[in-house]
Image (tube, rainbow over all chains, first blue to last red; front, top):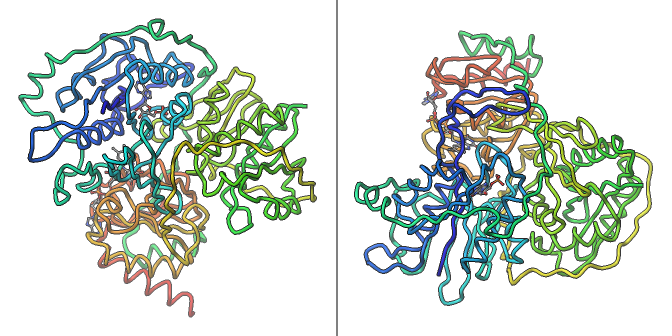
Length: 272
Length: 323
Ligand SMILES: Cc1cc2nc3c(=O)[nH]c(=O)nc-3n(C[C@H](O)[C@H](O)[C@H](O)COP(=O)(O)OP(=O)(O)OC[C@H]3O[C@@H](n4cnc5c(N)ncnc54)[C@H](O)[C@@H]3O)c2cc1C
Ligand SMILES: Nc1ncnc2c1ncn2[C@@H]1O[C@H](COP(=O)(O)O)[C@@H](O)[C@H]1O
């Protein structure tokens, strides 16, 4: 089994934004991994390992489309436990979503992967569409917004609980396939691979890199490809033309008591 | 004449209300490109629902149907194929609808198969080709211009008015599509049953955060919610901890709400939470920490423990009601 995990670097979401003429100015930003992609890597690692044993059930390959010299996030995921990395050397902020999706699909095919795991969205761009597009381009089934996943190794399928608007849907997808993960995938019992004891509870959230992991990361292979190596013609169907800050809410007021609050909600705001 | 196709979702033979803002967004785009708005209903046998929708018209030029057994239960795989088929047979150039979990799952698939861009979660139609969408947890509004023969969109429900019924229109069935579910099996949806209004449609939302400490404490928020005829919401911390079901989460990765009154109780106000409720008309925050960032967006801030404030709030509202 070979699992490909897509990982994007994003400007630190805790930094204040700098508004440029046609888009946000990230020239001085600190770059961090997209949180949903950290969850995706954690999901892949939980599927691949047998807790309490030494066996590995899958190879975990992380893929990022990013400038070759800004690969800190890839190294970080290798330190977390991924086996190797692939970088497609391009600035993702200059590519349209069509091109990003085609590049990912091309790598999946070239590597003959069995499973793609992506975050459900990027925290900066919030496109919420790349994994779905890749699944379509490859003609594969998809389970998006996954909150829990169980790998049926004999049936070569995943049983996935997906968070939908009015509850939780259970969907079974045969492999090869595509998974996009939501926040709850990193709760202690969300991922089951059939080999780690079912009683095992993980720590909540993505794991931290160990010291040994950090040392080993430097020795793990990272292949660097150009978009042309993958035979993908880059298109430019989207262009950012302006960016503004949303209107600020007008300053509110402090109320001293519940009595005052009710009085104001009734008389001033007229919402009671 | 170019066509704008808005994809609708139905349940029990009726249009699901969350689709109405998507129709309005589609109508605005149709007006900007000088095109025609068509509504598309798909399913195993969508004719009855389509008739009901056509009666109300919603300002569209017509209602189209696509019938195939493989379209129910919903899968992105089959819906993606069917939408591609609809675009090819109608020659539609703009395709979209409300940004529901259904369309967010299926539309990118169809867009990819047609080599078309998709602009997600638009909040404004600037021109025929330029749409505004929030990014970075709603801290910026980006104008995106698309340049392609076919364009997809999803529209944020809180930013477009629900489409209103108008003159009745005709229903035209499209030739049946071939759909492939790619081997998937849907085992069903475990619905969160509630007699309250849907979170995204409620006029009042009461949300609880980690400071509620445990699920049982949400009872008192439910009392307040029901007194106000509203919907219950929660922060990620409260949903992750299992205090309430995950579909009650408000925020960047949860529901986007914009009620007339939003009451945040024991919620700190992280940017990801604000992203889902900043558009509310009146915001009340109740938190024991006067430094909590939620107070920066609140119209009325009360520094208090919920254990003291909420019972009193319920009491006073009840007293007002009976006065
Ligand atoms: C990728 C990503 C996506 C996310 N998406 C979302 C999202 O969609 N929605 C969301 O909500 N969060 C989201 N988050 C999480 C977000 O960053 C915060 O961690 C979360 O909103 C915090 O929830 P909280 O306010 O309930 O908890 P806390 O931040 O722990 O705040 C609890 C608050 O309760 C107050 N309190 C405690 N006891 C009492 C009491 N007795 N009476 C009154 N007040 C009390 C405290 O003062 C504190 O302010 C996301 C995070 C990431 C990384
Ligand atoms: N430049 C990129 N490199 C690698 N993966 C990406 C890139 N952009 C998007 N993705 C993946 O696609 C997911 C969804 O992205 P989006 O559709 O842009 O919200 C992310 O969580 C990533 O896993």
